[in-house]
Image (cartoon, rainbow, N blue to C red):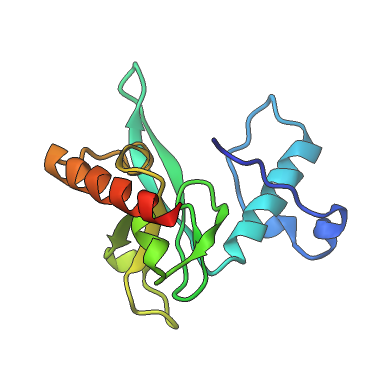
Amino acid sequence: MYAEEHLPDDAIDYFDVTDVSIDETSTMNSEERNRKKINELYKLGDPNYYYYKIKEYNENDKVRMRKVPIYSSSIGGKIRNATTGIREDDRVGSKYEDLYFVVKDTSLYTKTETNNEPRKLFYRDPEECERHLQLTLPRSIKEAWYNKEKTISLLKK
């Protein structure tokens, strides 16, 4: 379900790996650490990529902050899966937008200087949204979406 991102071999020439910090453990060698830093810099260069941090508790009740990466979609651009970042064939604003479960992120930290609008997040189904954002949606919302999606997918064929 998730796609692995691959960067060009010369990506190290474009990014400064000292600009990003990632969790470093003793099991990670320096080459892998640098690759992860370059990958994070590459993502941060994408205007539709952002993340937020959530608290996680382990079995000893120790708090650990975990990043939840999110990919939004631009108006008129191709629909982008909010979880994986993969661009779909359909465009934002088209009649096929209803094939996806759409969420608007209206939190303050998602707005940028150039874009003051809420970000649109597209998911394949409500369950993917629940897993990604770690929330529970009401059953009525899910049923309404599945009924609408079934009708639209029949029209698309």
